[in-house]
View 1 (cartoon, rainbow, N blue to C red):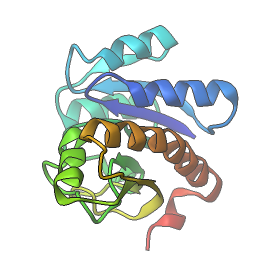
View 2 (cartoon, rainbow, N blue to C red; view 1 turned 180 degrees about the vertical axis):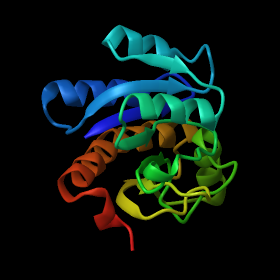
View 3 (cartoon, rainbow, N blue to C red; view 1 turned 45 degrees about the vertical axis):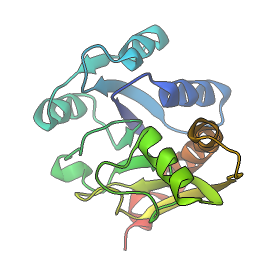
Length: 188
């Protein structure tokens, strides 16, 4: 399956994907990496790995690039904008969220904001959710969720580290499931 990675930051998830594909434990091929910020470290990493890498400021520019590369599955990897895919990819956008949806999700809930909210609420578990994205933040069909324990003494940074470790397992697992079963099998 031809995949594109959309990111806004450091590319930690791209690092994980690249390593897993190289090790043969993640299916699909990364055809292109796109960032909405021109100086995103993830673009530098993508080029180092040999992936075509582009800055694209809006959905139109992103979608033109995706069309050029024949993309079948879009992977949001720390992409901090609401992405609107072309019609042919509307059901083919996967996202990773750093909580167990439906908790701590929605507009404005990303990254450390989520982990601080879990800590402030006194959460005993957190985790991550890989889901198909639609036009509403964090509402598409769920593919994989993975829980992590939260200790009373954990800081938001501790929670973030544990959740990211879970993300590194859950996202490739979800991609493998989508490649094996097909995108349509996850939609009602």
